Length: 387
Image 1: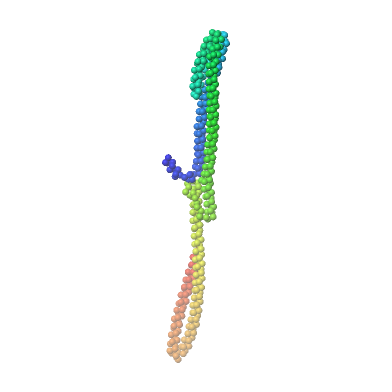
Image 2: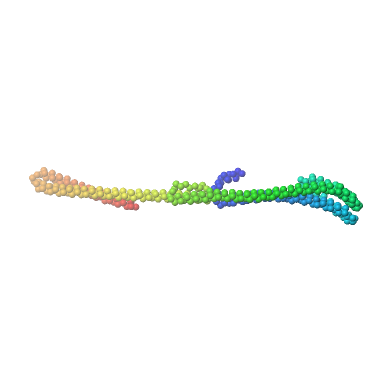
């Protein structure tokens, strides 16, 4: 008992496979049919016993008592035949027939007494009375064989007829009572038969209805409803609704297998959407970075152009200044003889200007190199942004 209890506590009905659920319902239907058969068989045995007792006891006893009454009437008829007969041989034959009838009456009365226990005492008294009556018959036979018919008739009227009437009265009452009992028992057996048929049909129909109700409940709750729920979950997942809950993944039947498959499908869809979102985010970041690099490159090129233009303008102005100073130096040289101090000062100024020109040329070269390097860096940044 502990094992079965533990097994049923561990195994839930919803974990049973659908085919096993169907087999379980069929087994339940078979159990109902078997119980109905056992019930009907038991009732039919009761009915068989009732009818057996009715036939073997009451009917047999009633028939035996009725035959005993017939033999009693036969005895009376044989007695009157004996009184009326004049042939001695025939009279002896009648006496022999009466002895045979007497033996038959005793046998049939004993059978009735055994088969009708409720009337055994009355039948026993009848058998005693009949023996007394047959003693009277013996007296009548002796007188009749002596052809004293008047005395034989007198004994018959005075002793035989009243005793025989008394026995017939009791036997008639017993026959009526036995017949009533037989009818009552037959009606009771018929009622039991009818109730057995009704109860059997009722039990079978109730079992069928119960099994059908259970089948509908099982089909709805254990099969149809979970499958519909899984279908609804799939429909919501197709709309990218990941808030839906998947029930039944802990089941171990076909519905549980479907629920687990849908859960895997949901997880894969979520991972795929997450990867797609991350890839889209990376693409947008690359585009934004390339756009910023393009803007910086353009700004740098513009700035470098402005610087080059400014440097070129300054160089032009410086060259003009140098030319002016060179002219001034020539003029000063021509006037060297006159103003020596001024010539020396002018020469110093020319050297200063020449040094400044060299530094300016170096600056222009460095600026050109930096512009080329900036252009190269901007080009590489643009190519990386495009990749």
